[in-house]
Amino acid sequence: MSVLISQFLKEKKLPDFIASNKSLLACEKVGKVFPGIGLPNCSEDTDLGNVDDVKLLARNLIGEIHSKLYYLPHTIQGKYELANLLYHSPSHFIIVDNGKTSLKLPQDIVSQSSGKILFKKGESFFKVYGQMYKDCGSEYKNHCDINNSPSFKRFSAANVTNKKLKIVFSSSGIEGLWDIATMSMRGFRTCQSWDGQYRSNLIGSILDPFTGIIYLTSGSQVEDYGSNMIRRCIVRFFVSTTDSRPHILIDRMYPEYNDHVWKKFANFIKTKTDGKFEIHNYHANSGDLQRSAYIPKTNNIATLYKVNLPFRDLKLQIGKPKSLDKEIVLKNKLALKNAKLLRLLNKSSLNSFDGYIKQLDKTSSLYSIIKQPDFKFLLNDYYKSVGRKVIKNLPINGKECTPGEYYIKLLYSFILSKKDIESSQLTKLTKTLNSYFSLGKKKKLNSKQIKPILLEMNKDVGSSLKAELKKSIVKSIKEDKSKLKP
Image 1 (cartoon, helix red, strand yellow):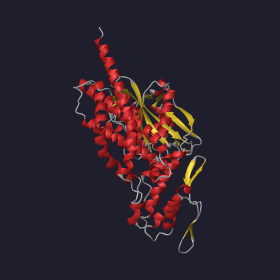
Image 2 (cartoon, helix red, strand yellow):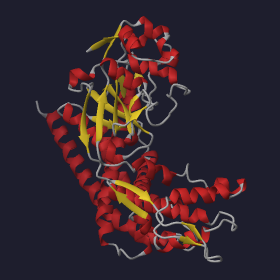
Image 3 (cartoon, one colour):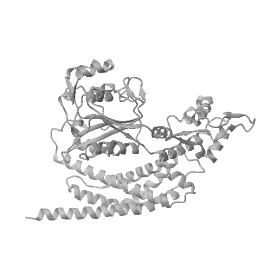
Image 4 (cartoon, one colour):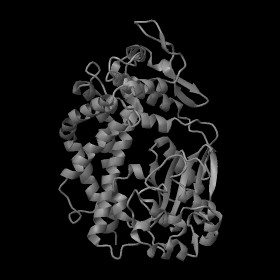
């Protein structure tokens, strides 16, 4: 379905940098590719079902704020009383009501010296901490601010009520173009807000037939822009130079990535398109798409200045490469094998971890740390760093072997050298965990505590790699035999 640009400008109140753009005005109409593949403007109700994950994020945030309390000056009333309560009863602060998690004082905060009630039971934990933060001097602000902390951002981004949520896909017609134009005006601001640094790139996103948007909304209205966007991603239709087939990319998630929501988005698109397209995740991309994919270029886009081209978090090339050098194509295929190894490490390590944590003593201090969702993320990052070390150390280029042979050598090299690489990365992982979770001296982890976890998991990861190696060798032998047939 195409829409006239003149009609779009007439019906919607757009800022001058869009409404007066010469390139936009020069285009008579815009059509999007998505309705033709089963993705018209559409929506469906959804339930995030992530209360348990949010509660774990809340515990992590409480731990971080507890450590920040000790940076506040000793003159702040109630800080020691609050710190003591946080230490002994952290879970009592967490309240879940109608799918929404809030943090509230489980009892009055009473001054030990005067007996005066400083803060009452049921008061917002953030309000109480905010008052303490407000009363401290400027020299304490950097250490004690929580608004920019990763734990606070992850908790806030994940803490969305489960009721009356919708997944919306939009690209075509006047409403589709409006959703794209206002994507950074409906709940959070980014560089593509109407006063943002890259606002002019909205022109390209509006005109590009291969740009759509998917978002999560509660339906509440944001001024005159439309329903709020709790999470949103640009959706791109692109072509792979490896298999010459069309694929779909769900680009970077704003305001912050949430794996649970991404899976909801991906399943929504997969269902609507009958599973005809491979769906790629910006946050799981290892750089292979930038080397082996392109967005088709149309006349609407060909005439645009660079400043007006669609803003792409994943910098996919616009337009088919004029010529694909054989060596470049082969390197792209090897890059896909590298990405395949990293995905295998990701999957096998997470599966192994889920099995390991069930056997762990739930009363141990270590369990309280590794049960947190972010621990899995950091562990996954560790295995990826080990994988990248192997890839970097493998002295093979595209001229020496086929992609299949390269993958076999890559797996074999990993199995042989992973022990040495893992030991070199163990100290780094331990330091990362201590820093990330803001563990003090008493709770600080050491390599001896982490090593048993890795040793146990490495058995499963190693088994997965060996099974993959065997499978790849069998496949290679079959391919060689087929080539010998007359």
